[in-house]
Image 1 (cartoon, rainbow, N blue to C red):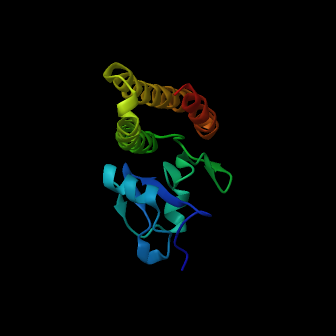
Image 2 (cartoon, helix red, strand yellow; image 1 turned 135 degrees about the vertical axis):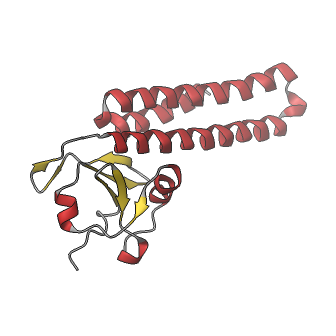
Length: 171
């Protein structure tokens, strides 16, 4: 009773004394995919987080599949000293790099399968061009998204939402 559990449809991570902490699954929090990814790619630990811990946090962020890593700027009207802080920034970068790798591989595989299906009708040069274009355009869109997130954190979701269909049309 009195411990932090989660946000609405999201998980919470708190920076305490240079250490990244998230409530354990035993607290009743959502077993989120992005939560697991942050735990896997950072030095975050699971531990009970009291409301007093949240009040003294240096930084904090929410995670979810739609938000990825979303820094929290204030708790109960008190501005957090770092938003985004070094732990939040590192978590966002590591999860994004992981997602880039997975997305790039998935898109390359999709291009390969699509190219293979039409292979009898395509020359090797056109087939190679399709694979190359798919990988390069998807990578370029994520690089632009990554740059926007670094320089304009509030644009993250809007930028991703806008860029994905635009670059998809280019293919």
